[in-house]
Length: 449
Image (cartoon, rainbow, N blue to C red; front, side, top):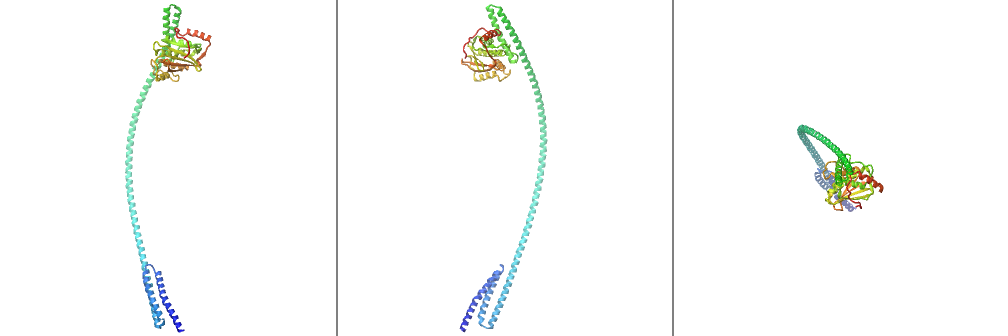
């Protein structure tokens, strides 16, 4: 029994010996964990010392369990020592905590002071920058004001100079305009005077042409009467020659009348057959002996247009005869077409170039009237043909001739063409051949071109 109790007590002592250091270590760890960071090292040392002391005391107490009251007193003293150590440790921890709080307060105060200093420095820098910017702005504003004043002064000077220049230019332009207006008035007056002179000249020319026409008509009538009175062949030949020359002078007077816009030639009461038209045209040119006619047409030209057609054909025949060799023949063909009657005049003279053909067609074009400007002796006949073509609706064109020269084609529109029977044609032939200046028989009738 006693052995058993002793073994139990031994086991309890052993357990107490083991558990006491563990508890002391746990208390030390708890003390270290619970202590502030700043005082954790001191608390740790204190806790270690306390744990060591507590362990020693506990071991001593455990060893003294078997002892008497002395051991209990030693244990009490150890406990008191441990309490004192604990108190010291608490005091040390409180002291460290207070020091840590003071350190934190000092750091916070230092931070506040640094922040206040930084704020004050920043405010001072901002104030300095604001003052500097205000000074710069004031300087820039003053400079801008000076620049604006200078620009305003320059603008005023430039405006004054421009006003002076404008005034000078206006005065100069007004002077030039007045001079130009005066010059224009003079030119207008000269133009009016020139136009008046031209109109007067044209009127005088037209009057002269009318007088020449009347004179030529009277001379032809007298020559016809003389031809009927004289039977001597020599005298009759001379009278026929004068008749022919007078007919040419009458054509020239008719040309002047056409160009000046006066009445040209006579108006026939009845249609004139194409054969009489051709003979009348031949009787008005110098080289009528070289003209060969080829006409089988029974058509006739209306009386109001017969004189104009005859005159235009005379001009075309005269051009063909003048621009052909002296012995070359000029052939005239008459062909009836649906649009009217085409009269073709072909010569074997000089071949006209394309440019000359275009110029000739422009001169006789019925859609173009160039007036009397630019007329020359060689283009007078073309101008007359053009005027007559425009008046009666004739169409005149030019082309190279198969005979080596130039061919002139004149289309008499169907509005001016009248179809006749054989008996009417013969009667009109007798009527018309007695009225125009008769030419010596020339040419023969044959086939068309």
